[in-house]
Image (cartoon, rainbow, N blue to C red; front, side, top):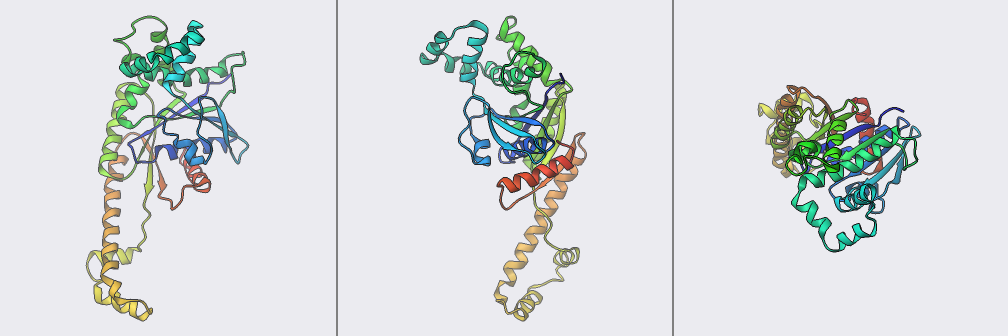
Length: 322
């Protein structure tokens, strides 16, 4: 049976990576695929976006695609993953839960971040393997989307075999880490970076692309989110830029329209501010265009309800991300 496609979505905080992850899952479902979208940071952002109950540590159907596909969601936490791991490989059962009561689970996942990431990504790995197994261990998916940690930590999160090298040179943890890393580096995986057209997020995105390439992790698309559309015509922008559109002219126009001419100064200031933001966007867009990754832009929406998510899903599909 064919492999499960794995889409890892990362981005600097505030860029809307969870929104992009959910929209990507919907885009894939619109193609008739059964998709699982996972979160690993405990924020319940997926549930909030889709307006459903908080996600448990189990796969739950949360949406349907217009093309006949389905979207399932899962919140993965390291503590539950470790208990499942202990039961799966060591048959500890109640003994594992006793360890949790004594705080051993929390201790282990806190002092060893690399082990924590093995547990989080290991759950995804086990789900992805179902398509290659004959036994019934749960739903099989055409694609898995991970709402991953921020760009600054994405290399460590995905490159788990290197991160646990000093802790586990042999044994099941090391074997699991090596298997996960092999999947993350395979041709079924793509790491998409979400950014906005501002200096710090763009620089972090460019650094992230370089880090992923250095670790042989496959870069997918750069998704430029929250793009502000140009609101002024070329003629108006030129007039604002060369100051031929002045306060008196705007005030006269407002008066003729029966509006308060005192708003002229504020309107001009807002117009110049808009041009500055557009110029900043263009300068950062140029930097991204010089990077090796393909880019897809998503607009700033007034409301990101289900209709907005479907609009973004259409754009991700048109841009080749889905």
